[in-house]
Image 1 (tube, one colour):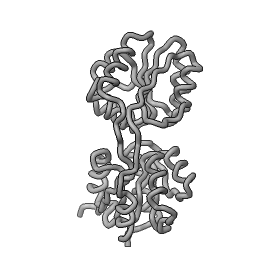
Image 2 (cartoon, rainbow, N blue to C red):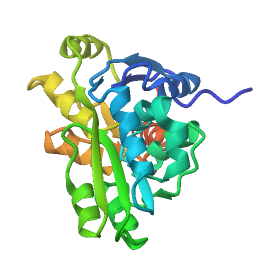
Image 3 (cartoon, helix red, strand yellow):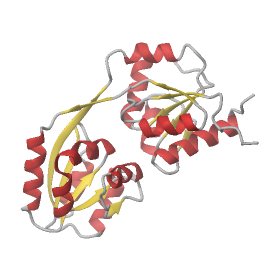
Image 4 (tube, helix red, strand yellow):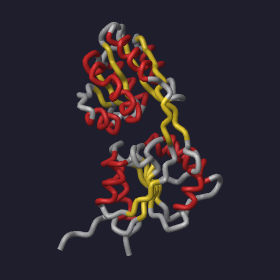
Length: 260
């Protein structure tokens, strides 16, 4: 007899759009979960295709070594349909962590560097250790990104160029959709970025989650953002990617919340 699916009977809220979380939603379904998609973050593009093309052209004409440094999978999804082929030809590619690297590899990109410490600080340190004096680094990123990565690369001697690709917003009606989803029993909520953590807090509008709901985060930075807003974190993925998140989720629920 086949083993039961490990998430059979579990009701899980995923806080990204179906398009951006398709792999996660599909994987949870395959494990038996009842998945409720409640998007708490929406991507609003800011840069135009011409902005991206111009940035890639300028990078190609800049001093070597040339790097393009990705700090989110969202940036990868926005850049590569526009200038991916040209970008790979002119620069080495660095990623802040496994989820971003996975998005790059899905676009056929060989990733030169993935930060062992999945943070802007960790990525900056590893790039600096390779020697950034005279180098050129292009950072396609979100509005409001912390300046630490750009600052440290400049301190290491690199010329840094930033393109603000997009901003993150909480979709209209998200608080109401979340409240509706929470009317029925929920076993866990997944958070995949600091923005989803902050928007969960905003959508709750002062309410607290039922103590039986496990908040599971994709990495320590996401967990830190949740805790800053008073959200108790039940589990944090050891690997900051989809597989790591699912491992943390299933492991926590199996250990702490056995199915009756």
